Image 1 (cartoon, rainbow, N blue to C red):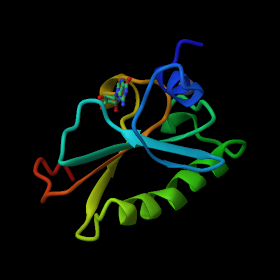
Image 2: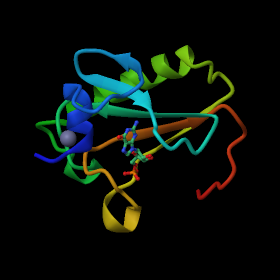
Image 3: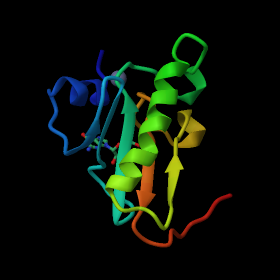
Image 4: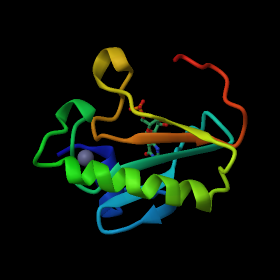
Length: 112
Ligand code: 5GP
Ligand code: ZN
């Protein structure tokens, strides 16, 4: 399967790791949109949040257990934003579910 994030998980594409456990991997985004911009992914390939179901949701729970740990490690105690883009209209470019962590400043561009 031609998935960039699966290749990152296999070490076939290099990445700057910030966190890893049995279920979750987090690394710096290659094109940061904030002073701190991380990508958090489950180790299993799930296409997007639209493909979460009862058989795979545990992996997403593990992602959300990891996010506060990562945020603490990165010194984001003043807050941050978590974003997941879904499909064409959502602006998703990599079809392996991922959660952007953005922080390190008062974030502009509030949509909701
Ligand atoms: P999306 O647009 O799908 O929500 O987010 C995909 C993100 O993956 C983008 O922010 C993009 O910069 C990042 N990205 C794409 N390819 C790579 C890569 O090879 N390495 C890293 N570290 N980030 C990548
Ligand atoms: Zn994948």
